[in-house]
View 1 (tube, one colour):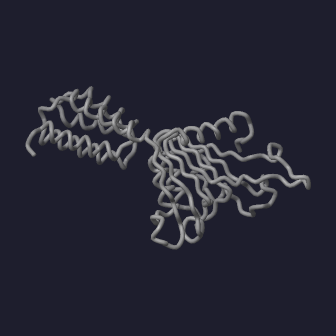
View 2: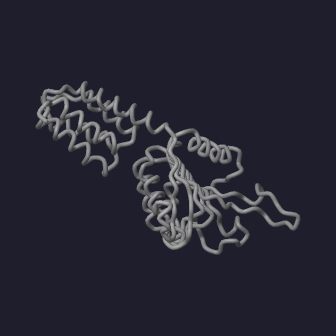
View 3: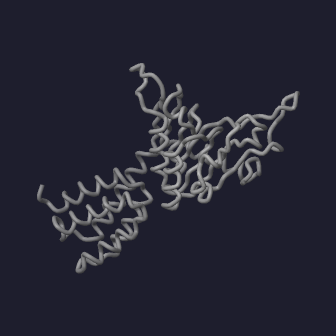
Length: 267
């Protein structure tokens, strides 16, 4: 393949498969402003527009191919190709897809896609917003690290947990401590306070038993699995990963409304 436009089309398509739409829009805006008489400066300015370290190398590859194999393709053309790819990708992602997520013995009926793998992918894909709800948190270092990295790239994170006090002793360990100080300092942490919970005739309160994760109102994981080592690796756990459609945004809005109305209270 020697046609410069075709070469850049391939590179743009490759990048569009890797970057979230929001970053493609930012990248297109940065590229549209560059001057090709100083490639070093142009490279620095464009890469600076991408805050995530894991994506900087991919953007650098695009710029390298552009400079060495298609230098006569204009910045406006590259920016337009990125915008077109972003819009096509967004249209495709709006179509709802549902996948089963399973941790446990392999039956060869349900594809063996472990819960921790699906959750880590969802967290790592989050570009602007991340909501996580869990009853228990214990020995979830990989999940906590992924959440912290999301916070470092500017994702707004809301986490709602059961706690020993709020659960009236139903869980004995400190879920906030299990998440780690880095996550607690960079996320909004919420509980369902006892004064907001319904009671049985014998005075027992309800439990916060949902296990949910939502990224950007576009991807939704609903699972039986808590954020614990056993749930992620040893237990039988079943869930669904929903991409696109209206359900991810509706679930995100549902929990945000519970926060706004005080049903869920920040700690």
